[in-house]
Amino acid sequence: MKQYVNFKLYILYLLMFFMPLWRTGDNILLGFLFLFSLYDAKKSGRLNIKNLYPFFLYMFYFCILIVFQNSFELDKKYIILLLPILILPFSLQSFTKGEIIKSYNFFVLGVFIAQIIASFGIVEYYFFSEGKKVALANYNQVNEILRFERPYLGFFSAISLIISYFSYKKSQKWFYIVSSFVSLFIIVIISARLPFLVLLIATIVLLFSKIKSRKFKIIIISTALTGLTLLGFLETPLKHRFQMIKFDARVTIWEGSIKQLNTTEKYIFGIGSQSKISENLLDYYKNEANFEYNPEKQRFVNKNYNTHNQYLNEFIRGGILGLILFLSLILVSFVKLIKKNDIFGFLLLLSVSLFLFVENLLERQMGVYFVSLVLSYAYNNYKYENN
Image (cartoon, rainbow, N blue to C red; front, side, top):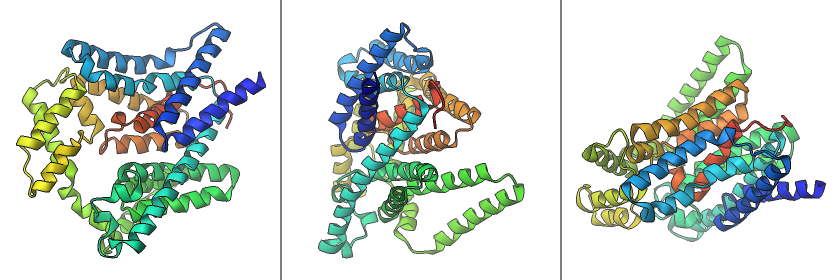
């Protein structure tokens, strides 16, 4: 029996390790975890799905929209992509809270491997290529240099730093200090804007959670604002990245997304099809968007960028009702974590919630896995609080 429990736990650890690295491996491992969970349910004689109702409702609404739009063939790939939203929370119910938290350390290790790989690309770029002439923050081939997409590498680096902080508090292991420095280095060197803000907000939340005096809280806020002001006077790639927001590709993408919503006027139930949203955006890039240079237009057309805002995407796809269902998953999670006074889970959920403003996490497998993981951590009532 003990060997069975250990084997199941090792599968969870491997799944967390491969989450930022290997898509196929995660799918196989999740399949095993799901089978073990079904076996545990059969052995105990009860199937615990009470905490999964909000996830079922979200998926059911999405499927109903596809049926009414008669777009199953086009959208079935999105249904398959979203399945971990149901499977992962169910599969994690048989673990303790302590085991779940420990598994996050293997996620940190996976991110660390990704960061080392990216660091080799950065060194090669700066010392053996045109890197001395063109700042990495402004280089249009940054993803090829890093071997990973910059937004996700930056986001996972911020998440890794948060996890490392809590893990170091508990274990005092030097690896988490090294991991934190590497994460911070990656965020700064690739000029990742949102991860920088996530870490700033996370630091303020942590300080607020430890300090009761209102005077000291005011000092914390004043210090943070002063630091940001001073940063504004320094000429750094990160500052330049913030200044370039008005020229960001997302501005064009969001304009096309909002125009699509206003054109269809389907505000209550939405368009209903993710593939239709992608098709409409492609048409916008080809025929309506204003581009200064033709190569830029070709880049948009070739990549066919998604809405780059999960909340906006849910509004377009599912209307007000779909957005409410999605927001309820997040808001209820916040309430549960606040009631438990779980700062660790709160910061992870806050990070995800902020990242959803600039990326469609639910259109990437690693994004679906991580969102499902963070939400299930809040929703599941674990067998005992083993920290």
